[in-house]
Structure formats: C-alpha cells, structure tokens
Amino acid sequence: MLVVKKFGGSSVADRDKIFNVARRCIEDYKAGHDVVVVLSAMGNTTDDLIELAQGINPHAKQREMDMLLTTGEQVSVSLMAMAMQAMDVPAVSLNAFQVMMYSTSRYGNARFKRVDTERIHHELDSRKIVIVTGFQGVNKYDDITTLGRGGSDTTAVALAAVLHADKCEIYTDVDGVYTADPRVVKNARKLDVITYDEMLELASLGAKVLHNRSVEMAKKYNVELVVRSSLNRSEGTTVKEASNMEKLLVTGVAADANTARISVIGVEDKPGIAFRIFDTLAKNNINVDIILQSVGRDGTKDISFTVASGDLEYALKILEDHKERLTIREITHNEEVAKLSVIGAGMMSNPGVAARMFESLYNSRVNINMISTSEIRITVLVAEKDIDKAMNAVHDGFIMSE
Ligand code: ASP
Ligand code: MG
Image 1 (tube, rainbow, N blue to C red):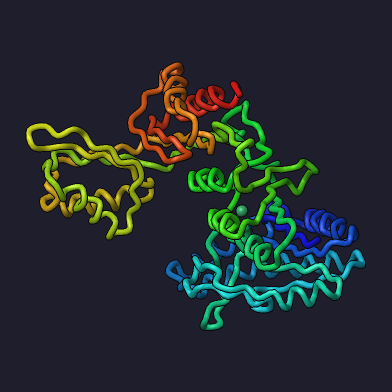
Image 2 (image 1 turned 135 degrees about the vertical axis):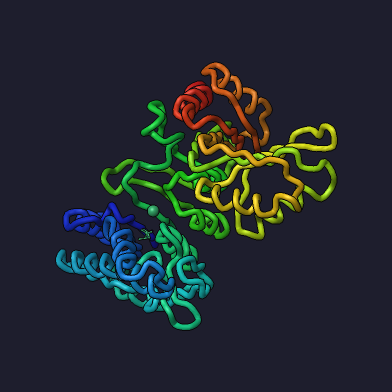
C-alpha cells in the first residue's frame, strides 16, 4: 500500500512535534507500506518570512517572495529526514525541483501542470520514506513558484493522484471537519464523511480546513481524502464522492463576516443596465456574490449586491466614477453584515430546507436581508451582530434534529 501523509505547520512547529510526526510515519513504514510525506513550513514560518520581506521591500517582486517563502518548507523536510534517520529509518527529503513538480509560471499563485514520479518511485523502491516540500512548484523558466497560501494540501493531493496512492491523509490540529465552527457553535460535531462538493462550498466560505484547490483536484482525480488530527488517534473526516445512502440533508453551517452590501438606488429600469454595472465591476476584478434586484417603479429600480469587505472601498470608488453612465441616483452600503450558509448534498432531492432555515431564523428573531442559493447551498445575509446567534439557531435546527 502507498500512503501520502501531509502535515500542516502546527503539526511540525517544534522539535517534539517533528519527532511525533516522524513516529507516526515510521509506524506505516514498519507495517510495510510505501510512505510519502508532504510538509508545510514550521509553525508561523511563512508569516514571519512575509514580515521579514516587508521590512526590506514592501513592493518585493513575487518571484523573490516565492524564492523566500519556499525556504520554510525546505527547513521542515530536511529536519524531518534527520529525525527519521536519528531513529534509524532510511528517509530522504526532496524539493519540487528534485521531484520535478512543474507548475504554471504565475508566481505566488501557481497551479500544477505535470508531476514526475520517477524520482519518488526510485527512492521508495530502495525502501526510504520520501519527504516532499509542500506549497512549491517549478515553472518553465526553471524558477521556483508557490501555490498560494495553504497550498501544501494541493501538493499532497497532486502526489496522491500521480502516484495512485491508496490513501491520502491530511493531518492538522483539529479532529476533522465539523458541522460548524466549534468555537461558535457549542453543539457542533465532527463529520465522518463529507462530499467533495460540500467541502468545496465550505472551503469557499472560509472554513479553512483544506486548500480549495486541493479539494477540486481530489474530486477531479477521485482521490479520497482523510482529514485528521496529528495529536490524537481519532478517525477524522473522509472527503469523497457522494453515495446516496450517506447524503445528509444538511452537513454544515458556515458564517462569513468578511462581506459588505452595496446598493445602487434609482437606476434606469431598462435592458443593459445590470450588464453595465456588473461588467464595470468585473473589469476591475471585483467579485460580486449575492445579487438582489427590486421590482421597477416609475421607470427606476434598485440593485443590491455583496462584495468581500476588502473590496468595498474600491467598488464604491468605481461606482462613483461611473455614476452617470450607469444611471445611478444614489449609492449606499453596509459593512455590518455577514453571510450565513447551510450546505448539504441532500438538499437537491429534498424540498423545504429553505423554509426550515428561515423558521430557525424567525424563532431567534433574526432578520434576513438577502438570499441566494445553489444546488447544495442556501445563503442568507444577516446583520453581523446576529451572526453567532443565527448560526447556533440554524445549526441546532438542522443538525440536532437529525
Ligand atoms: N506554508 C504555506 C502557508 O503557510 C503553505 C501551507 O502551509 O500549506 O501558507
Ligand atoms: Mg492549511
């Protein structure tokens, strides 16, 4: 059996933790398996390196940033190999160059294009544990790239895919994927399984358990993932394709306070206006999320939509600059809003999920500002001050009653 095991920064933050990870990998090795380990940088190394760079040049080129940031992973893989060797187990550390993990050329946000397996197979054949740097790639200029923050998960999935691994385990400092953030929702519980699509919806809502692209890739290549803790033996959560039996009505509830609402008031009620507004925003790289349009009255209408908080100021400026062309009478905005979503693959075939969500919100007297849905998700916009209360109410309304 071939296993890929990925450990995040908190799992290799110090000497004891490095030996703890080494022991867990050696267990698999001694059971006769081929073991490939992917590591993140130790603790907060990546953040510290970014800070260091900012002190030198706040406008550092992304190429140099990648050169700098990838050193973090190189530290952890070499130390891990030394730890295993100290325990008399043959191990070798490799970076993206040595494995040959080719990526697109985009520094800071590269994607894998092709990953060679020859070197890894060669090392496994001589019964070594192979330890690979997460987060990095090599582009066509023979430069080192990074995959974006949290990208080590994607390295692990890419390797599991090309090596046809029997298992891909993502170790972290939590027991798995929860039905809601356990720091906010006291009744949150760990899930045994979740589908790729549900995980993708959760990840894009800011549940930072897995790198979004790692889930996309796992789905594409059908790599079953297990998210589990490096600190205990709990079974963790399996991320895989849905089987009908397992489809839960609602798997999780997620909140995102990093959102703001903008309303453009009194725009002309005629074809092409919505197109012009959203085209202008898109051309300026502003992502728009929930959109709500009022019924036209006296030849005008209002359109509201949400953007990420970080984009608010820029979006307002763009709209102000184009106010006349877009026929806008007035622009208003509200930063004190948050998104609340319920996610579940079972929604597709079960009516009434929205009604039940709204009932829970009504019971706790939380007002709904806007609503949007996908096949497996319902999102509402509520006041930010209500978000914790709303999250608990909706969570308990679904999860506790199943
Ligand atoms: N060390 C990188 C980061 O902090 C990559 C990772 O941990 O997945 O973003
Ligand atoms: Mg991570």
